[in-house]
Image (cartoon, rainbow, N blue to C red):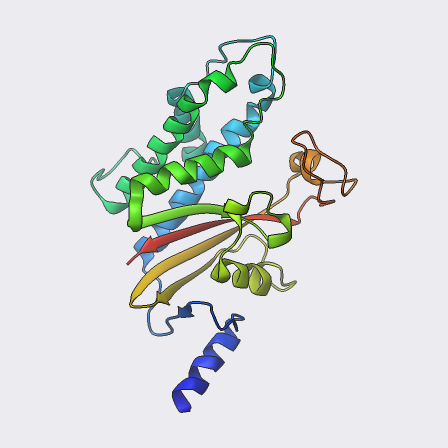
Length: 253
């Protein structure tokens, strides 16, 4: 009973008392390189999504055909944002390292998604294209999964009641962190959660990065609650600063 009791106390301390949840390894600290890799993948996705967000007026302009937003152009602007936000250049240093390989997988995925949607982006005479940041991020994550395989994954999820696409629903571990950590009043705003997790006979590093609604998000996610936004979904009635999403990264060990 001693081992069972110790395991229960560990889970209670971490706020993850869920019978089906993976177990945190108390004796295995998160390696610094895993932390850096996961953080860089999150930052790259955020940078690319911001480029798509900032170009929504152009993308949705029905009077212009070719918007000049090829995959190469979007990636170049993404790298500018990434360098500004992180103070690092992902194209510098050892490009054969695990960190560089995974970042290149993500960058290649950004180019793939933008190029695959050129007909939509450049459709003249059409206003709203539905090529919004959330859709773009999901498509990039799916393309990244095909490239990285079992080595890594990136997913944008959210509290269950905010998820609009079932593909983005949080898994048991993500849900436990969202409800037990990110939604707790005492959780430091913006602080990521990370852990080495045992899942069956293997381990994986997991990082969850909370994201909060900005004022610009409220056009689709604000008030009045229940009214339909431009995409046809009911608004959540959110306020700026509310938890709106979570970037979840998994690195195989």
